[in-house]
Length: 137
Ligand SMILES: [Zn+2]
Image (cartoon, rainbow, N blue to C red; front, side, top):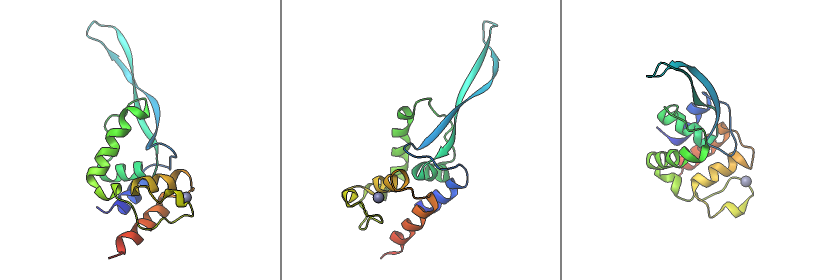
């Protein structure tokens, strides 16, 4: 799958997040009986919003089976999985589509995060821009 198509596919599944791959919500996952016979409530975490890179993750791998309650606990692993699937995320794009030239030294992954978080781009717009890169010989 193309990275741009993965972003589009994921964007159809959840609204846009900013600053994190996944915004998450803690939900009541049912009441269970422990081995000792006591009752306990299980809580789980589910994604409710995804940034452009989170959408790429969703579009490629589907929703993570387990989300930790704290972003920093699982996001490094998700980034690694994305970078393996799309090695070009670690390369630098030739052209930056916004006027922020301080981004020039950044990787494609960093530029996507910048467009999503700082420039207010929709994920679809980011996907369209990625297609212009992919069309270049
Ligand atoms: Zn910018």
